[in-house]
Length: 188
Image 1 (cartoon, rainbow, N blue to C red):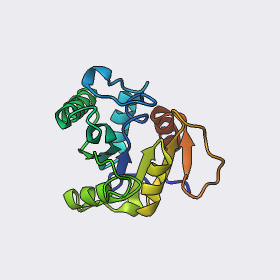
Image 2: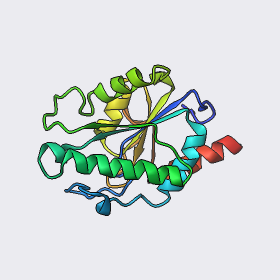
Image 3: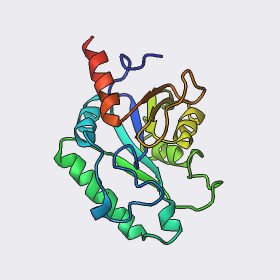
Image 4: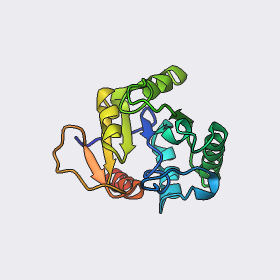
């Protein structure tokens, strides 16, 4: 499905964080702002996405808080700095939703859909059929499909899937490369 031509400011973009916005520390956690490094081209990509999408929200599992590796204050500080930096570069993140639970069956922990439901409560105009999830794990893709979203898988730290795939509509090496595909499609 070619959604690029359909995207306008009535659409919502759901973004995972680690490996999508910032470099993922494989096998560990980003525990403070000093460890947070934006993915190459990520800030520019977020600026371009802010022009295309009416809403941009982050939905992120952060089990490190539940494990006691970092505090909720550390996590809030990371997200305040992240959203401020994105805004400084001309982009926008409307809200960050976080699940710190350890249990996989927690309603907010992706692939469960609690964070999507919270976003809809905060922004009633969200239409999941007019939404895209960009993530780099299969749980992100399952989260999106459960809500009827278009799914974009980033191969930032994982191998690509063979397409077509039941959970993955498109895949790219990075957020920057996906945005380039949107801009190219918009020009054509």
